Length: 87
Image 1: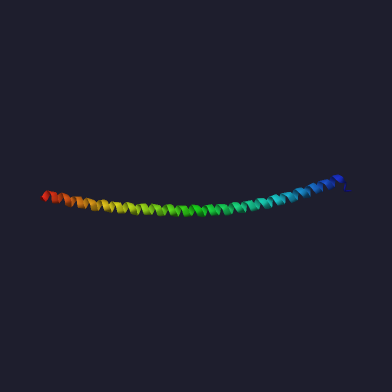
Image 2: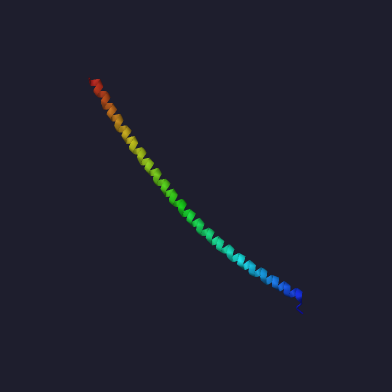
């Protein structure tokens, strides 16, 4: 009925099935770790984008401030020219 070939075949099939289950479980754990890693990377990218946006807003406000200072200096120059013309 069952000879040595059948026993060897069943043993190999059981061993391969167990190995495939272990490899599948490890692959599942690796995919879970990759998912966590990508989530953290996404959070870091979001935080860096917020920081870059804040720097951009700071430079825009600084640009507005310098434009205001330039306008004030031009007004002073205008009055200074008028004082020279009156003399």
